[in-house]
Amino acid sequence: MNQENIKRSKGRPVGSHSFVRIRARDLISMVGEGAIVPVSKVWLRENGVELVAPQMTIVSDIPVAEPQEQKIQFSLTTFED
Image 1: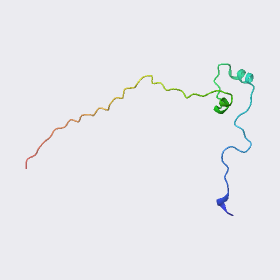
Image 2: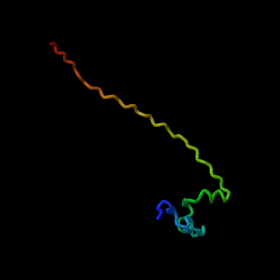
Image 3: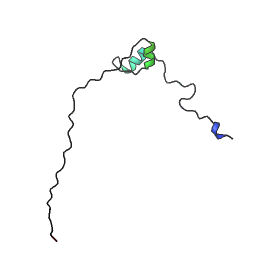
Image 4: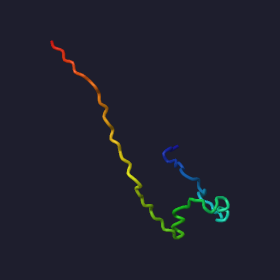
């Protein structure tokens, strides 16, 4: 048998789905009106919602403390021959 030609399957099995359909009122009754629900970006685009990348705002700079050197105390002793 030729082992090099065996194709390994990866990912989802054929026929499986990542999304299911649910009525909005059923979803609202489960999570409430104020819930944040993840939706597909593709679905939003298909329904006319334009996605805009969020702007980053810097609230305040954090000062970076420089590491201080530790001082070593020493004394020199000289010996004469």
